[in-house]
Amino acid sequence: MNYHLNQIPYRTSKPRNTGYTMIMDKGLSIREVEDMIDISGDFIDIVKLGWATSYVTKNLKEKLAVYKSAGLPVYLGGTLFEAFIVRNQFSDYQKVLDQFGLEYAEVSDGSIEMNHDEKCGYISTLAKQVTVLSEVGSKDAAKIIPPYKWIEQMQTELDAGAWKVIGEARESGNVGLFRDSGEVRQGLVEEILTKIPEDKILWEAPQKAQQVWFIKLIGTNVNLGNIAPNEVIPLETIRLGLRGDTFDYFLDSLK
Image 1 (cartoon, helix red, strand yellow):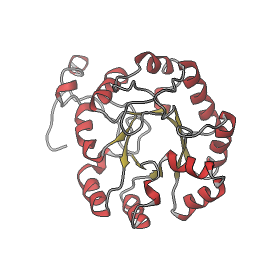
Image 2 (tube, one colour):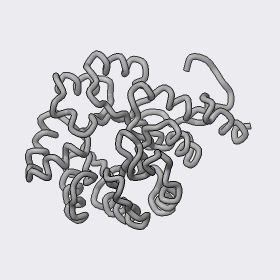
Image 3 (tube, helix red, strand yellow):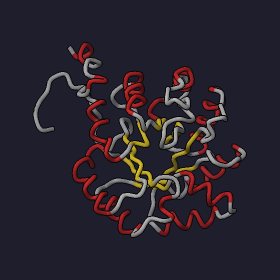
């Protein structure tokens, strides 16, 4: 850091298992990636190329090489996985992972109907090839999944070989874990945490109010995802109690 401040909460350091910040790259240019890494790479743990943007992204291999040279793992959005599955092209998807040297993959079923045993089968198979993140929750705002089913699916997907499970919110933060207003489904989150270890969950939380809520509930080192590239440093200040939203939150516990 550039100077010393007392009573700053403990922040895990990279490489870390908790306190993850996952950013969503929705089509950054190579120059934009280089600039982002230069200013905020120390606070980024993993990068998702949103939904199926990798299909149309120019100079994809070169862009991935920039991330790799900075030590930032990249995975392709779960919607792309679903696009391959719905077309019966799972083996082609596996070849894409190898072709681009990807070491992580996301398995999701937010846009398609998939038997859960089938989904766990894909997780188990891919876990032999790469590190798997699996996403739980629907992108359909009208589809409300009861808490017991979130817990059941998260646990079985971890058992199938997922490294972490992702709580669905989309890039907008108004489905899955959240109401259409963006408000957190508090009871759902708290019930999930009674059964699933917090270090195993990556919560998609693109909106500032959502990030603040999770930090106040779980702490500085909560795993958060779908963070916009220009929000990485603002999020880090929220984690450290250096923004108005959490300014007083960590002071008493550190006196």
